[in-house]
Image 1 (cartoon, rainbow, N blue to C red):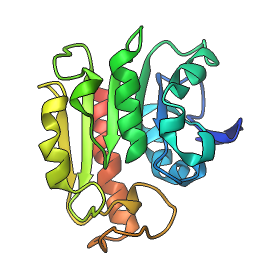
Image 2 (image 1 turned 30 degrees about the vertical axis):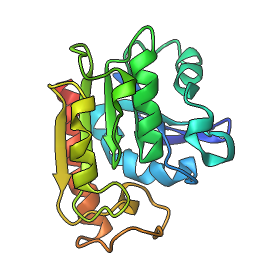
Image 3 (image 1 turned 180 degrees about the vertical axis):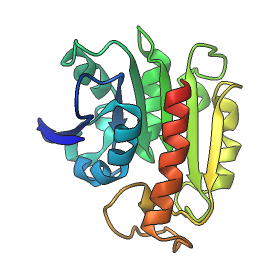
Image 4 (image 1 turned 120 degrees about the vertical axis):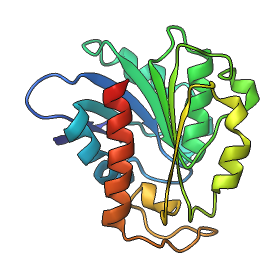
Length: 202
C-alpha cells in the first residue's frame, strides 16, 4: 500500500500492480482527507481497491457533491468505480450516485444514510453497504435504520458493536459522539472485515 497526495486530497493505492477498482470516498464534515488513510489502508491491501479521498471546499462535502466525477476523469486507467463517504460525506456520495451517468458499481456508507430524493430505492444495478457503529452518537443506528427505505432492497447493513462515529476516521473525539466500547484496533478489524468482504463479493 502507498499513500500519495492529490490536490489537497489523498490516494491510498495498492502495491504491486494496477488496482482492481477505484473508490472515491467523501470525507465527513470538517474532517481532513488524511484522517481516513489509516482506516482505509488495510481494506486497500486486502481488496486491491484504489481509494481517493478528495479535498472539498472548507471541508464541507455539500459544497462539492460532484467531486467524484473529477477524480474519475483524472484516472482513466481504472474501469470499475465505487463511491462512498463518512457522515455528511456519505450523504453527498449517495446523492452523486443517484444522478451519475454512467452509474458507479456501488456505494459504501460509513455512519451515514441516503435520502429519498437521491433516487436509489428502486435501483437494481447498485451494490450498497451501510456500516454503522452501535455507539455512534451523530448518525445513530436508529437514525440510519429509519432511512433504510431510501436504499435499494438489496443493500447490506452492518452494525459494529461498540464503535462510535469518530472511529471511522483518525481525527480524535467529536462533539456529540458517544464514548466507544471497543478500542480503535478492534473497531478497525471489524470495519475491515465488513468492507473488504463486501468489495470482494461485489
